[in-house]
Image (cartoon, rainbow over all chains, first blue to last red; front, top):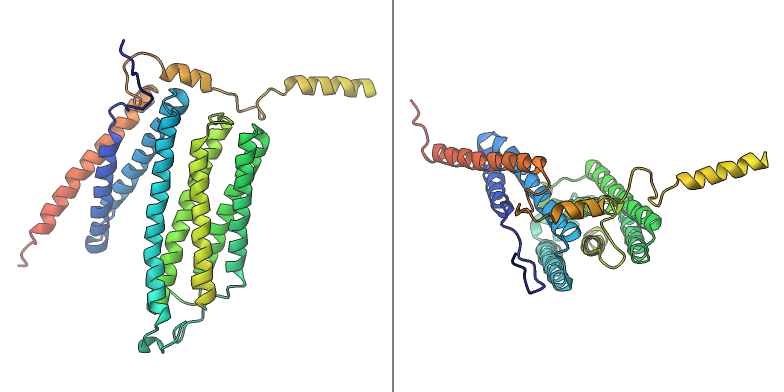
Length: 261
Length: 83
């Protein structure tokens, strides 16, 4: 029987990178078929295989860590670096949309009337639902911190309660934003205002949904006793991501909703 | 009356297990035993028959889908002549 003499994790050969890459091909070619040829079978296949890949890949990571014990300190350090770098890449992703917003709003063109918000646009009142959304996300930042402290103190009941509250706040935000989208007096096609507003807030909303999903997975894992008071990096990664989503909203609120009105 | 209340309290205390809800018992040790068995099975199949079925389904959809995508690309590359 051969055993490793180092603390790193040499993973078993896995099919998920291949299925993941192929699912990306199916999603992109699926979009093309949908846009140009009125067929959505490829796109559906792409979304299905993408979900199947994500489910099985991350299921395997849980098996390797919680059930097989491969996540030593050094492996965990690598995962921490990885999550930080991923979140940094997302920061740059959003930076592009903020750049687009400031480019157009700091020097409004004559076709917009030379001012911002442009002619004919009635922006949403930043003191109404957008302010509530801000408070909802800030509160969820508090509840997720409570979750973490409860986890570290070994308080199962409190960690579950606090995590549940965080998830509900995330869902509440999403529902509020959805209703704002339906009620807004302007659409995505209403000049560069509509484009920058809906693309920036839209991608943010998508990230809220992803974060909520990540937190729900953590809830299920905590229910199943996967986390210990000393080792719960999956939760920490979800918490970092959630704080990032909150910070992006604060920038959106200040720039687009408040200054931009 | 007080005595029956005390008895009730004792029973209630006995039925509450260390898991905070009756549905959730700690099954991690069982899982650890299953996934640490020295049988050479890779982690993505080590959970049992369900793993193999899900893997096969994923492969069929992905590889089949890829073939279909390449077919559609071929079709789109050579537009049909109009009569």
